[in-house]
Image (cartoon, rainbow, N blue to C red; front, side, top):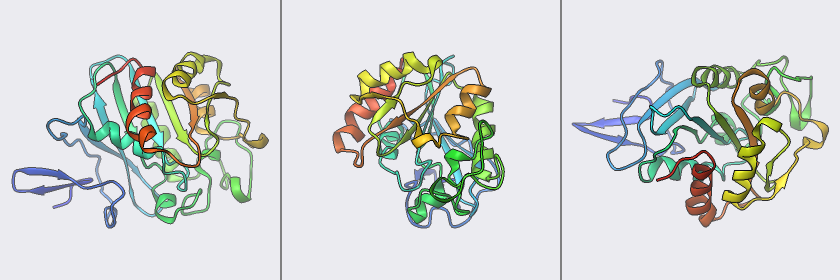
Length: 255
């Protein structure tokens, strides 16, 4: 019996891989709160929405749920930028974490990831679809017919509003740097520069930064959000050592 990303085999709870073939054949119709596997960081899994094609949008909770420091790490907002998801899967599947309550969203754009496209199944760039500074854009940065037109966008907005995180880090490729442009996120940015070994940068999106998740979050909620860009390739060391360690250190957590 399938329960929101887990298979039950007798008394044994076994997770399947998030990106595994067939994992999204049928959407779940209720949010999941499934206990993690002993010895790993995972505490529970939450389905916070569904993609255009009905794939589950999953967040994995690790760390200390009682901590006042709430953190959300997001990857694969663009489906053809899957490298940083490896870092989040390392955090989920590795040793227990202390110091913060952390939610991991390794594969936000599930349909784009399945198709290896930047945009979702309706050819919308989800990081141009949020309802702050939204303008109508077409082509590579297609912003959709209206602000928050996409189910993925609305689901993430509701999820972040419910969590009200202290920090949000949106992870992308391939511009290789940490965005230092948001004043209220500057302290976090400098800690990430140090911990991840990536250079400080200001990302202008070639003047097309409209309707982004970080713009919406920083305008709407009290926490701080910023963008981290890895290069074209995420190395094994970045995925398994410097990435997980640097993210945790930047938010006051460890394992």
